[in-house]
Image 1 (cartoon, helix red, strand yellow):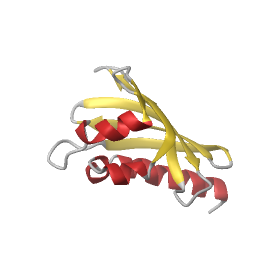
Image 2 (cartoon, rainbow, N blue to C red):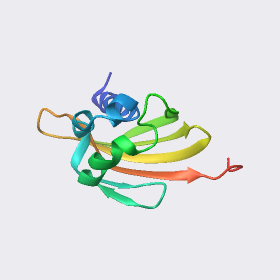
Image 3 (cartoon, helix red, strand yellow):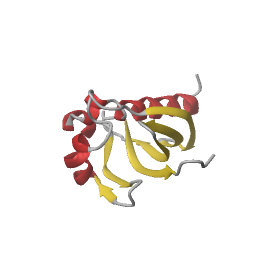
Image 4 (cartoon, one colour):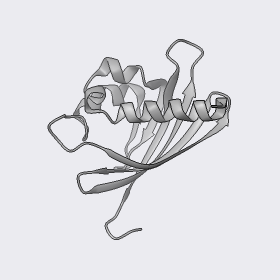
Length: 128
């Protein structure tokens, strides 16, 4: 596998981990996957920073093993530059469909790949 494909694969693996309810419910596990400069623009329109996301993630949808889980599809990634990957994908959570865009960057430390930016857009019913 070439280095660009390997970078994309590692970013996708991190993205999938962040959808795991056990990771979402664990601040320690989530810290390993979110960049300290992380910012999210959520489907609600709220902007969330690293600290806010870590404090709230366990209470967000998809964070309980007893509730609906994220079902990802159409994950596509491209390496924008060495150490920078952009992912796009869709998820279903119950009956809610959302389109996502995230940027992952590889740190110089042992932490490896971390999500730097994320945006989610809810897809209204009936939209292709």
